[in-house]
Image (cartoon, rainbow, N blue to C red; front, side):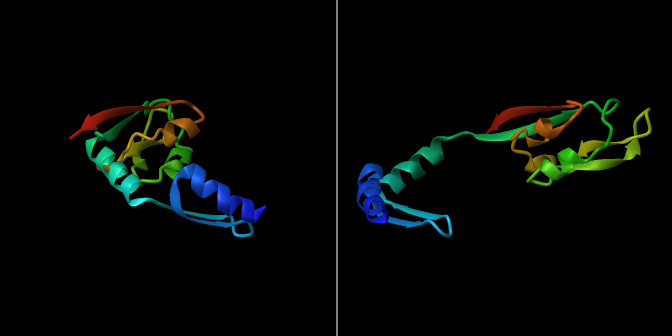
Amino acid sequence: MNGFLYKIIPSILNISKFNFSIKKINYNFVRDKKTILQSDKNNEKMAKVRGAIVVDTEHCKGCGLCVEACKFDVLALSHKVNLKGYNYAEMKNPANCTGCTNCATVCPDTVITVYRTKSE
């Protein structure tokens, strides 16, 4: 089966080098120079997206799931409390937000709204 992969996959994907290991589940693809240059040009044209998060602080119960789900260290639990006595989530590093919506996805109370804006 491995011989088949080494012959067929590089021709299908139009690549010059293909490494495949089943035991380690390690895939290594090296693209042609033409493909790399083409993808670099496409990346230059793409707009950068920044995110902004709005938390409904009065309904947030401070479970901290959003803080753990954020890969970019944007959220933290506030030292302030809402009317129910919970420490609510707030943005501590707004410049790091990419608008990925991981925080809103894991929020059990759906109190997080994520907005995306294009920036130059």
